[in-house]
Structures are given as C-alpha cells and as structure tokens.
Length: 158
Image 1: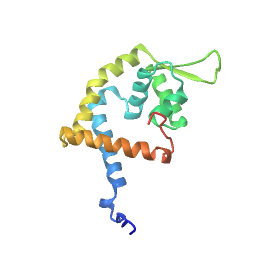
Image 2: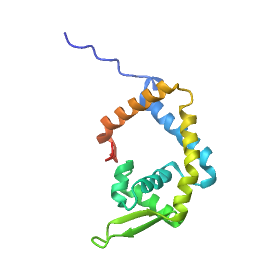
Image 3: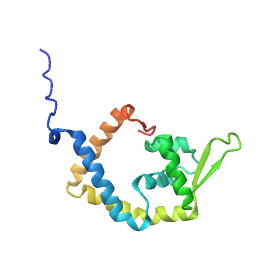
Image 4: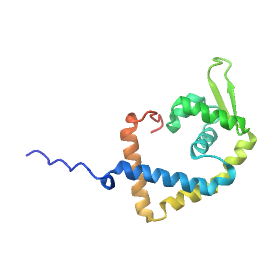
C-alpha cells in the first residue's frame, strides 16, 4: 500500500519558510541590539569570525565556509578593510588570490564582541529548554546540510 503524502501547507502561518524568515529577522534584530556599539552586521561578524578561525585563508574559500556568494563577500571584505578590521593580501603564487587576515583592531573587535554575540544567541534560544535547544540545532543542521545545494551560495563546510 503506498504511503500517504503529508498535506502541503497552504496558509502562510503553516509554512516553515515563513517562520524561518521571521526567525532570521529576529536573530538579526537581537544581534544588532546586543552589538550595536560596534557597528558590525551579522554577516560582517561571520566574516571576521571565519578569518579568526582560519587565518590566511583566501577570500573565495572563506565565502564557501560561511555560505556567501563571492560578490557579497567582496563587498563585505572591502567594508571591513576600509574600517581597518581586516587586511587583504595576495599570494606570491597567484596575485589574484586574496588572502585575509585580521588586523590587531579586528582581532580586538572580535574578542570584545564574543560575549555580546553569545548573549544574543542565548536570547534567541531562551524560550527553549536545554534539550529543545539541542534538538532544534540538530534539526536545523539536518535541514541546512540536506538542502545546502539548493542555496545560491552553498556552504562548503556543511
């Protein structure tokens, strides 16, 4: 006997995509409230943190790590470099490859922002119990990794 298909959501408030978009809006708002004194957006922070975790990586690889298209990455890097938070250099082998490193100021900003970013994450997850938080993260990772190839900028680290 064939398996019965699950009903496809038809109303806006039955659609997971609607709630994912709303949660993303909330996550950005909470991040900006916590870290507003630094004037760093969530995407800029992701770039700074990725460079901190993988110093000396090239710009294209880092874009893949965090799921950004290369043109968006270029703009973000340009803004961070103009603020003195990031240094962009080239390799001796291929001058087109852009190697990224944090400046001292960039390192300081990431370190000072970490407790605020942690607090923002805690605020977002506060309504859930510890077990629910683990389950929510587990399920989100499944959805992201399984659907990664559907993204306009698939992440290479998933």
